[in-house]
Length: 253
Ligand code: 5GP
Image 1: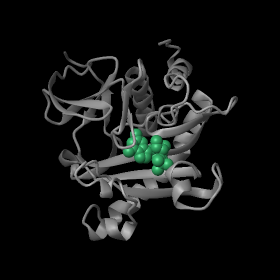
Image 2 (image 1 turned 180 degrees about the horizontal axis):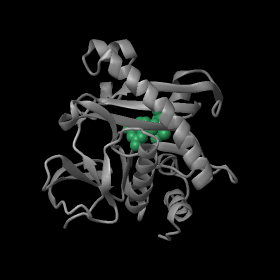
Image 3 (image 1 turned 135 degrees about the vertical axis):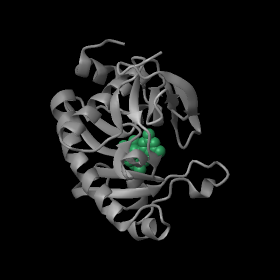
Image 4 (image 1 turned 60 degrees about the vertical axis):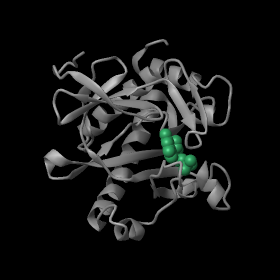
């Protein structure tokens, strides 16, 4: 199997909660195959949603291209060798989840006494320390402040400033993207960053930017179109993915 650049997909390198990562014939690149697997609560709740992989991969690829067109550095390198995959630049992942919030929902309302859906006076960028190690559940993705990130050597002060700046800009761009192209409001999202070894350790956005990593609310009905449908055991968790894909590409799954 080869992608449009003629790079061959080789071996499975890593099977994550929702995506499978493959090596390729060019050591600078990997392929990410988005699967229909879905999990929540750090893997405690698991299932599959038919068509989710295709929808997420199409949306993620389209957003990466859109962000790149505005000068935001990402790992996206082109289509993969299957309809639900993308070719990406190999990166050394930074062990952080970077979250940006426009409204108070989810874990934020469990930490602070504020009303659900409270509109924050300005977008808020927060960090969590990425830890999926089941032997240390007490450390499951704890919030981490900027000084601790630097003190633990996870990223330098300059890199943290860069991630703050890029995340804030991505929020502006994705808010506009989702509103104008998909008629949904971006409530919050999570992104991850990595360093590209073949490019002097330059930092780029990695992983995915899809309805699995955002909260999206339909402007006309107020319905949730993202993974919260599954997290909160709502009716038909596939509905959001199907609707968003149809709005983006016209495809019906
Ligand atoms: P919260 O901290 O409220 O649970 O999540 C904030 C935002 O980040 C939501 O859009 C959520 O989807 C995303 N997010 C936070 N942690 C994770 C994670 O571990 N996996 C995924 N897929 N999304 C996450």
